[in-house]
Length: 251
Length: 248
Image 1 (cartoon, chains in turn purple, green):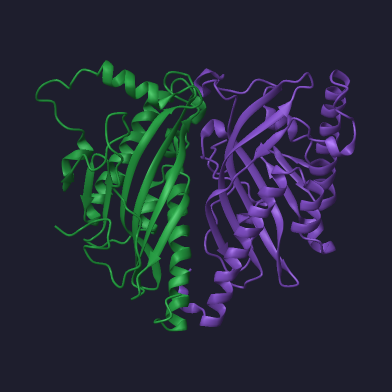
Image 2 (cartoon, chains in turn blue, red):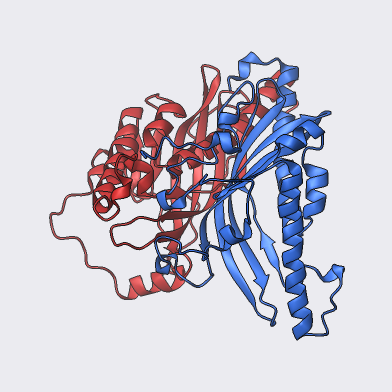
């Protein structure tokens, strides 16, 4: 973005906006790690009815549309998984009490953010960002053991200002690498076998099923996009179904 | 606080600091797609002063940087494509470049300084990255970790910030996730690979290097700690004391 088109007052506002957007995503990463998913939705995501309706959560296999659908999966189904894990742990080890405070017992997940690329819209109403995460996911097996995975991929997000506050509007998590620590990626089959992809299984049944990112072809699909300087939000460049590109694949 | 600068100058430099992060991140995502033409065509200064360096040496001047970073890089991508198209015919018609690999050099721990004169910026990054590709000639997935350091200089030209100098310093490399760089390096020292045949030509990309390497060495257990790209310190204007490419 040519810095000379903005006045000093506008420019310092934009500098501050960029830091707030990065801070917002860092807070999301913190809450994701702490399993504070309900609080994340309530505190960090858009809340105005018209924005809730157009909120999106996407991954390689499709998109949840609308904050209610996002919450049903991101909070509800995840909560069910945690309860199922705790049921199993408590059954095998009565010393672990089956109570809400113990949800998440034996788990550890983190998606640290690196490589921030953030663009604030020229009109100042929206922002777009892209990060890369070398993360991990560890889930209890219920018998005192756990299963661990490296989960690495791009995380894209669109943001919107509500009453002067930046809020998360749309997120796409696009894992490329999913591998058990100590196992070589080279030993995985080239194409995922049906039901073998942990992150696909966890993504549930999205509102729109579509291949948004296929790491078989590395980053050929360019999704989620690296945001470019822009004046006003265009969903064709967004973290949403309209942003999925297909022209890289001939047929 | 740089209170000797006007508020307007400080705002300009704050933007410069953010743009140094953004431009380097844009490099990471373009390079991850092997979009060399787009990277060097869009986010680099075309001045004779620009340079790009790796352990093997440094290219100086935009024409030489382009040859090494675009011409030769594209050739390597197309070469890899010729190794996979018969095994995976579904790649037909796709851009061969991103099919080559994802060189994902993530950026963390940046230390950035913008010159008091507002004309240049300097940045140091660590990059704990990954290099991977799914479709390969040996019909196996490929994924490695690669940790490097970057020293990067940026220049403000015609109202926008652009890359001017880049120096890449690779430190450790190995297979994800069963590699152990300490064991691998020890084994290499104990059983060094045979030297290249006598009279062998250097790799084509090295033929135009203005500063032949090595400029930095991969980590081994028998060398001191290197400080090839020291962090930038506050500076007034870019000169030979404040640059990742000194003039010759």
